[in-house]
Length: 535
Image (cartoon, rainbow, N blue to C red):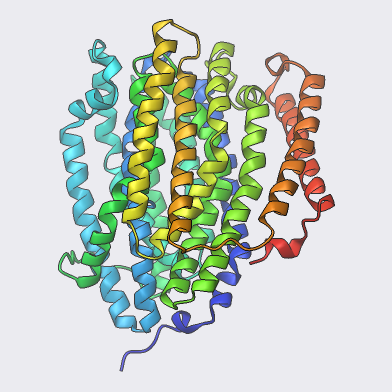
């Protein structure tokens, strides 16, 4: 008789110590990652600048974004969304042997598919470079550099896909902290590559491409032993005929598009940016990196933690608990997302100047990156909501509905990008790339609105009482925060005139701290209590 999986039969409330505690653990590790990420971006901007002065940096950004886009498909995006509900379903049966067989077959199949994709990517690198950077058609040397870096970064996809499979297994067993630490390792590796590898290359950004590959290997190496301690370290046995692997494949096909909609929009934006002024690709990249801070700290944490919880509720046919958990997730997404978006909007130039405006990254680069950051910040609350809304479908093994929303979202993004950016391009308006960022933000709103509508229309989600009061508290607290932030910003003056990184960081932390404290105090004064944060 097969021994049952103890975790599969434990009470739902005990798994992972509760949603808020699990989200906090994930966010704490993500905070370390974002701090390391800021150090990495600051160093990268200082040493290498942007494509306006160093075209090879634009080549690296394109070569980095394409495998990152595929990572969302084969790693933490599509694969994870399809894999976790099936894994939880097998755990509910308590059959340990079946669970191990599924993991072995899934890991082997994933490895086989990704190896083929990597080989094709390396072989077709020149064609891929032309496809994703059409504006560089008259710059063959820049396209050749992009293709060369693509051949280096593509194998990263294999390591990061197996790492994500490992992270999904650990998250399912309530181990959130170590998987959340892997981006810290990635950022530290990239910093080492900038300082040690890059100077050894004739084209220094090529050293960054090698850093990406090394970082992928180290992230996988960090998680692999933890699977052994659970007794679930995969044996790579391609199991394309395994029934559960085939089920994951069927679920995964629609999610190939839907789970990576934000990345698709970024790729579309990158292609358009290659047609604009030199440096536009880089300005969008650096502003997107700043947008990822709140999304990674709160949005990804919520989505990662809530997916296995919702899938367990669905497997247990607990519709009421499922709806309550989703309601909690949406409130938490807005609690973090609305002030984060507002803060980025109000402090776009101070943040950009503090993080990037050193060395090769000049004042003009700062102003242009702040333009796209201002526009993109409008979509932060919607991006955050989508991190919770999409798992609500994946937990039910419904991957087609998010795909439909994603298709409409990408169509909206392309149309909005053309409508907003084309006049700016034709009349050579400085900061035309800001139109791309605004289109991305508005497309994010479309995505969240569609997912919400589908949930409500099908009766899957019934909002708990108190949403009107919650919205009023949120609006009042954000208004109070905005008054404090704007007052301090006007008092401090022009950020680019503040001498030294430490002074800029100090003033920025003061403003953010005062704004955050005001927001929390206002929420408490308006009636928010700790019990409202607990699920």
